[in-house]
Image (tube, rainbow, N blue to C red; front, side):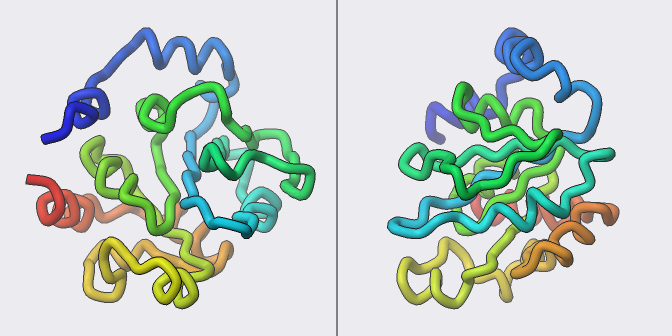
Length: 174
């Protein structure tokens, strides 16, 4: 194991309280954490997700890679937080759903038994240029991948199959 696994699995009420003190609105709705992979020289596609997410039900916390900080082209919206104060692993402690893409974060997040979704709008390009940690078409958890926002949001609204998450976790973490 890696030391950060203990950190990921720790409850850390003090850290959670700091997050809630900073963002009290996170106590009111379901917290969806979006952690996209860094795409060198390209912006992450965020605007359609920001526009379409149902903020009456969800808070969207966007944690960009440190090299891909928020810029003026990313839309603002009430209920959407572009987070830069806390570590991703800390935000996972208050997240109730996680959206990522090709990041190994999906494997680490599976330890917390949080529903994981994969927004892979550039799958073919990313596969060729960078390679994948796992093949979405061969993994049962691949049923939670989407290349478009509308389908992604439908997946998030559906009942989650935790057995698929457990299989994923057991395959990649001993």
